[in-house]
Image (cartoon, rainbow, N blue to C red; front, side, top):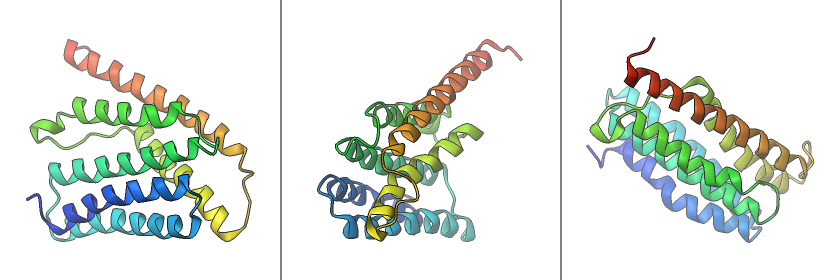
Length: 178
């Protein structure tokens, strides 16, 4: 059901993604950190509620992961204007998500199949999107801001590895190879 509470929580992150990117672009850190924490809360809540009510569906998983991908892509794209994230990362994330969605046959109602590296990348995208906001809001700098671009390049590399691994695995499965 499209309009279940978990799906609505997932879809709520879509307008938050636009607002978050605008706040990062305009350096509105207190608003950005509020949006970030609401996005994190809805991300945790949608899955919890779906599992608790035995209402988890392939559509819900697609909405959840898709809204996360849009949220981090737009936020990281906004960080590129501050030169803290390489432009390659917000370009690759939608490509990686599309591959994830297509090779899982999610458009045919099948559940998404994440790889271990893909899961770690997804978490790392959120961390890279949110950590600078936290630092700027709190006035603390445990990670120098120049280092974020290096972390971003690390995620570019791991995203490319993950995409290559998914492509090779799909090729082997379709060929019937072990």
